[in-house]
Amino acid sequence: MYTIIDGKKVSSDIKLEIAEEVKKIREKKDKVPHLAAVLVGNDGASETYVSHKVKACEQVGFKSTLIRMESRITEKQLLDKIAELNDDQDIDGFIVQLPLPGHISEDKVIESVDPFKDVDGFHPVNLGKMTIGLPSFVPATPCGIMELLKRYDIETSGKKCVVIGRSNIVGRPVSILLSKKGVDATVTIVHSRTKNIEDIIRGAEIIIAAIGVPGFVKAGMVSEGAVIIDVGTTRVRSDKTKSGWKLKGDVDFENVAPKCSYITPVPGGVGPMTIVSLLQNTLRACKQKY
Ligand code: GUN
Image (cartoon, rainbow, N blue to C red; front, side, top):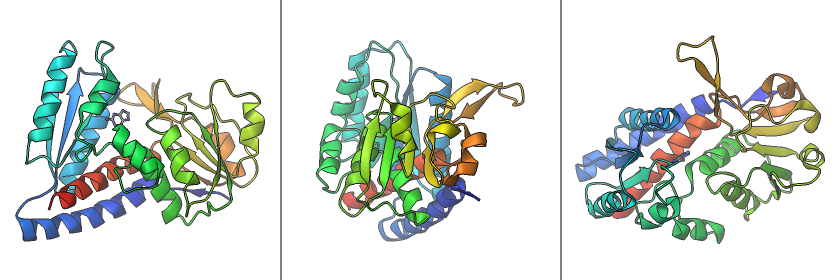
């Protein structure tokens, strides 16, 4: 029998803990943490993610500001807005929702965010600090994955862990966190150029699937008793939902789950944890300031 890792439940527990801290800060400092989000254009998925982030801020008592910019703005206009947010004393942390329109360099944008306000943890300074084990903002999804493993008491020390995908947002940072001292997993990253990818995944005791290919991980690729963390959130058409689409993970859940010891569902697994990690980073940014 397998256990479903309930990210929704864990994230609502953590939100209660955050709300308690917000209360204390409000009483002591007469202010609450303030997160700003910049949304360029109106990509459907980004709209949904950002609205979830704003809603989560309300739930824990944070102040939030949503800044919408049209997709045809210039790179300079976005960089000017970021400079403004860097200087705004009331804002503790902010994010620029990715992806950005093709004419704007994501690297330049990420590098222009003040590392002390970079609650996404994407700035090279934060990624560098994380890599050598210094305190830093850790990207939200990897941070959420680590929290789930911890709260479900899943042993990582000495475990063979395969991370599928090497993105800067998930695959690469989570592989670093899993291999660090104290976590101590033996980590392999596999990607589109990996040979014998199925054999390597089959050898894993912990699988982190983060490639964005719905249903990629099949039952035949998973060994008995594996722990599976599914980071995939691809929108696929569905005639069963009002919106006309539903989220599908990177794992063929129905057939894979019976072989696992633990598995995250999509939705309700990693997704809610990503948002709560962003709140934790913002709370930290606010506390650091005082
Ligand atoms: N796009 C997909 N995931 C993320 C995220 O965690 N932060 C930002 N800013 N954009 C994203």
